[in-house]
Amino acid sequence: MPTDPDCVFCKIVAGEIPCHKLFEDEHVLAFLDVNPLSEGHALVIPKQHYATLDAVPADTAAAIGAALPALAHAVLNATDATDYNILQNNGAPAGQDVFHVHFHLIPRQPGTDRQDATPGHGLPARPWPAQKVDHEKAAALAERIRGAIGS
Ligand code: AMP
Ligand code: ZN
Image (cartoon, rainbow, N blue to C red; front, side):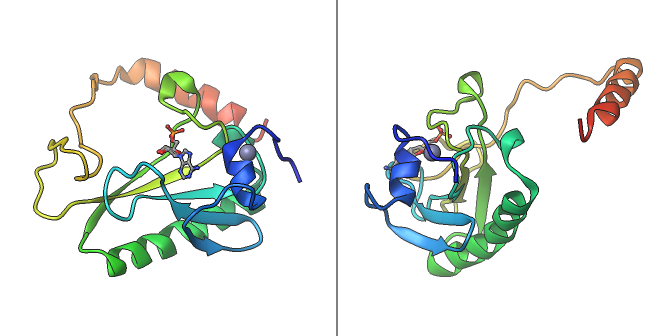
């Protein structure tokens, strides 16, 4: 099993650092984030150490994919939230701080505006710096990506 002795999430999986555990199966562990953006902010991680999502094998990815909706259902049932974000950062420039794959499940505090950035209210929504698509470039790019699938 790939593990990194210096990784905080590997230490949680090994029981060397405590966590508020929510769910566990063969491939996946879910626990509460220690610095929550809102009540119920949870992390879903593979038990094995992979730094970024593109390194995760299909069986583990499938287990994460099955755990996320079930956990979302449970968090909504156990809190007042009806809305939530799934956030997953890969690489330092993309905002990743812990280099062991993790999915954030971040409930949105009920009754809050989407751009409300008050601590405890969850992840504020857009604006993101979106651009207009260039369809010629997009067609060429899509072809390159299709050709790279499975490589
Ligand atoms: P990211 O910035 O996407 O890498 O997110 C890392 C997340 O891990 C942050 O939200 C941290 O609060 C959380 N975190 C770091 N250490 C722990 C820990 N020991 N237990 C629970 N969550 C943690
Ligand atoms: Zn790790």
